[in-house]
Length: 364
Ligand SMILES: Nc1nc2c(ncn2[C@@H]2O[C@H](COP(=O)(O)OP(=O)(O)OP(=O)(O)O)[C@@H](O)[C@H]2O)c(=O)[nH]1
Image 1 (cartoon, rainbow, N blue to C red):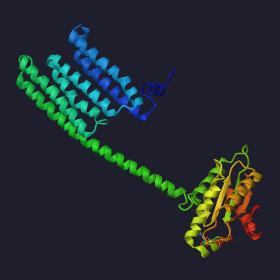
Image 2 (spheres, helix red, strand yellow; image 1 turned 45 degrees about the vertical axis):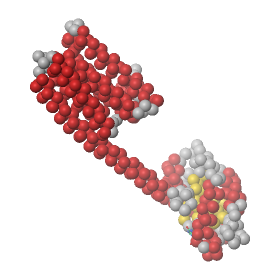
Image 3 (cartoon, rainbow, N blue to C red; image 1 turned 60 degrees about the horizontal axis):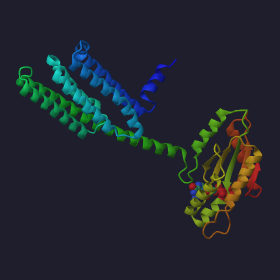
Image 4 (tube, helix red, strand yellow; image 1 turned 90 degrees about the horizontal axis):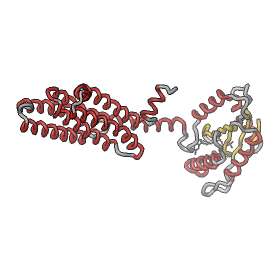
């Protein structure tokens, strides 16, 4: 059986924008049904041709707009065009209804300002004003024509008063909805600005500015995530701490800017060896933390050796003869051990690699 949610999805589509447009369509369809049904339903049922014709016209119009909205969304038809067409259709219904509703015609005038309200989300304030001007000129022309040709049923004084009322109401609604549109546009700009700011904050909170690798805070989150995911069925997780050798010498001999450049090149070279799911972060000054999930120590060592080869191939800084190298301590995470302890062991292994002469990987 189809659930309510599935039925709504079938009728209004999955896309949020289309969903909203079709909801508006449904809103107007219900409004037409109520207004036209009340004004002309009984007469149409009694076989009165004018009443039947307007009921059919409205039903056909409503039916045509449903596929038009759906197709329009697919082919990228501007919502302005659709809203304009629906506005014009609605005006024609009102004018026709006004002409044939007899003493009940005043009721159709109430609907005129409502047209503007329904179009406000798709039209810009100037377009809404144009629609209102069109609306009032067509309705005003109709009233004038009837008053001139059938003053008995359309007394000129009453028509003039009706027109003034509908014009005042329509203009007031237009101005108000115009203000609403401006407010919406301002809110949208503010929302976009906030999203951009949020994006920047997120980047600043997770990325190291110099190397563009994950920063220490983000790496801690990834480690905690890995710890929570602890899954015996998966392969082991390896952790390595990498440290550039004699980095202070680079700084001291060639300046801080050269040191920064080495850090950037180092990050780019080592990152090139990562698979999806691996993580490399700047852990501190010239120290980096590598997490390789689902990787055996032998494979982790192979990754580190490839990184070492890439780093060794980097051009030394201007004036330097020695190439950049790094030392690393590697440890495997035992699932019964806190992951921070695995990092500690890798750190100790790194120290051992430094003591043993640097430019090497030592396993904890
Ligand atoms: N250029 C630059 N240098 C940094 C940055 N962060 C830390 N450093 C420097 O990195 C150097 C690290 O020096 P040490 O801890 O003595 O290590 P090392 O010279 O690499 O010696 P070993 O690790 O024992 O091989 C210090 O001089 C820090 O000032 C940075 O962002 N940019």
